[in-house]
Image (cartoon, rainbow, N blue to C red; front, side, top):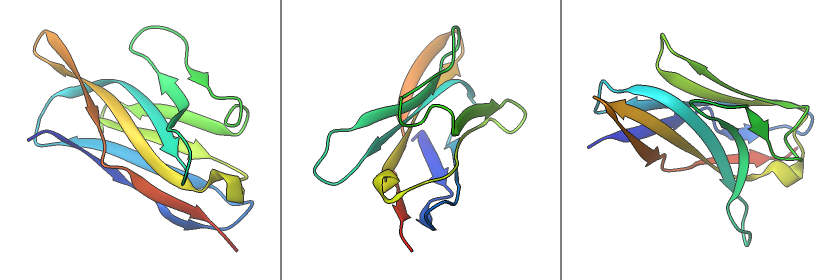
Length: 119
C-alpha cells in the first residue's frame, strides 16, 4: 500500500513557524508534484499551496508571503514552511502528492496531520 507519511505537526506558538514534511512510503516512485491543503474544524478543506510538475508555484492568499512549498528530489520529500503563524492557522494539514509510477502518474493523499497554534 502506497502511503504519504506526514510529519512535523503538533503545537506551535503564535508567531512561530511550522515545517511539515511529506514522504511516500511503500513505493520507490518519485514525487513529481506536491500540494498542501488544510481543514479547520467546521470549515471546508482549502488549498494552501501547490507546486505542480509543470507550471508556477502558487499560494493561497493567507499563505502568500509567509509560506514556502518545496520538494527535495534527493530525499523524495515535500515540505511546507509557514512563518508567523496565528491561531487561525490551526487545522489538519494534508499532503497531496503526485507520484511517477513508470510512465504513469498517480495522486495520493496523506492522512492529515494536526497543527495547533496556541500559547
